[in-house]
Image 1: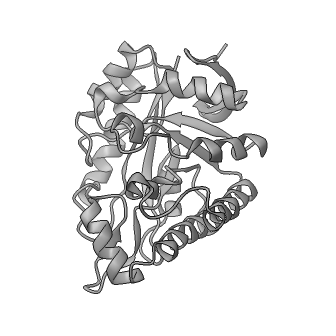
Image 2 (image 1 turned 180 degrees about the vertical axis):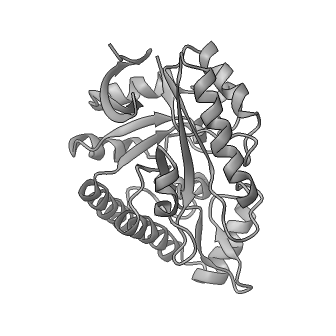
Length: 283
């Protein structure tokens, strides 16, 4: 049986109503599902939930929980971290969990926030305007913000930790083997370990064909395994049929790396469970 706590519905940029996701999760014999729409942001963002929708989102999840006792349903958000603008801690009291993710890095000359995982052309615009085409400085700033988020506003789950790599098409900017990049990852893992956060293993890049590997890359997962840092499996689903997309293959990879457990919310608490390529073992 699987669980998935990174899902996006029609409340943000997902395709499908909350009830449809629950029904699909039941059809898949999932143990639990958590909703994690993109949190409202105080500026125009086409893929975020609106501030006006937030109360309805919470109420609808509460209703679904009451009428679907055979599956565990949890209330979450995927919150951005933008210094002085938004952070995961803003939502803690209203939710079962928060995913903290970096989607924006600093500001463009017109004052708008530079989105780093959108269109590649937009990425190139920001790279030139903010970092004078210095990819190393841009990547280092991304990980600096990740560490700042974890230190100042520790989320339950650190989302798609190395997602910025999707802009590194055909390794045209850098190699993940370069010492400076490995150093940034090492510093970030140190902060995660000290904070006690969970790291998600996100399969979305693979099934969208934007990455050949999970977020984070397998070599990073090897370090997390060595450090005994908890991980959970998620698909970052925006469509009903992606709820457990690439789970079997990824779980098999995690087994080969050496992971013995996956972390999941169960009966209201984060717990560690044995697993195999067919699912999490809750018994």
